Length: 473
Image 1: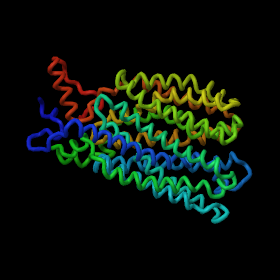
Image 2 (image 1 turned 180 degrees about the vertical axis):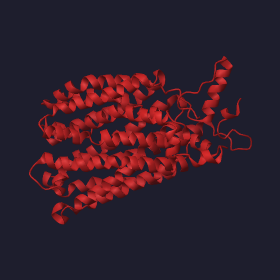
Image 3 (image 1 turned 90 degrees about the vertical axis):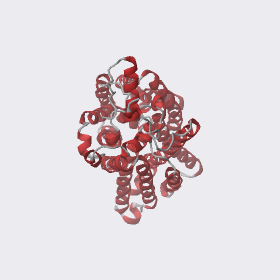
Image 4 (image 1 turned 60 degrees about the vertical axis):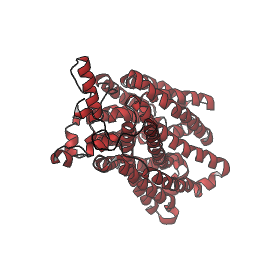
């Protein structure tokens, strides 16, 4: 066996590899720790959008509800502008100091941001100073979530067995969606226990306080996580000082600029579609279809619950047939289906019709959400994997995902709401071209051990050992 094929812990004089039972336990802990932390991160992130309909007029005075929502959506979008900064800083930290340390830092930052929103003074108490506090909190959340996505995507992918990366990485969107469901569940509970006046006065602060408390539990859990084998192998490798000093830097990422471009292009359609049918859906059903807030919220909650259940099944399917078939199915469905689905949702008159249409859209989007974390991680080598996932993804989200709701409201306010449907379809079409042209990443080697094992199998078959896209180079 070649030296590169030796697995971590199997070298002479090193700690023996853990027994299979211990290895399974370690993988389960990694899955739970990465997922629960991601859940809290995205709970705090999405609860802002879920409760905006109740606190918009607390920070922005006026008689036009759409204008108030546009102001809060603008601050929501500004949070996305900090995601590239967070992706750069925390992605670099994850590549240089480990995935575990970056995961712990992100949840700490999110907790602080949630507390800031919980105590922010209203316009009546401090004028626009409250909006400034809201803005600062969203900027901090943006930095945190920019690093969280990459750290959790990288961690979940690296910590999964090679033939189950699609399944393992699918839990990123399971936890993201469950975070949003937790926020929506709290919203539904509060809608049935508090009056609208109480929600608008002080009730909207409760979920942010809870988010900060949840983060304390996750902080403790993430402190118990073990670092991934791929990162430990990279950190302990005998590469020269030059390679070590550039690990996780923009200089190192520049060597993989084509892969970074792929991340941006394959993210474009997925992020616009995801935010359209999640954060914007409730507002669309209320503002355009004329549904009561409680009914629209229940539609979102039910649809997202089933959406979360679908993710692991789609992830497992990608482990069997590859990533590209699912991505292409999503892009075709979103390109052709957005206009008719959104048009029908705009005239939906009942809970069941709105739920059916929402589920149809989310089933289509599952082709992207279930595996995008694995695809992005599989494009890069270990020494720049977290930064390679974080920065281009965060840029694409800042430009398109974070602005999706604002663009939708802008079109609505200008009297051309249907133009937004074509905008979503156009973004999906660009991603479709990318999916058709890019290689499938399912068989990529994420460590030297995996690359060495591939080389050995190739030698046994007499094949030329050509490492897939994500192999260490």
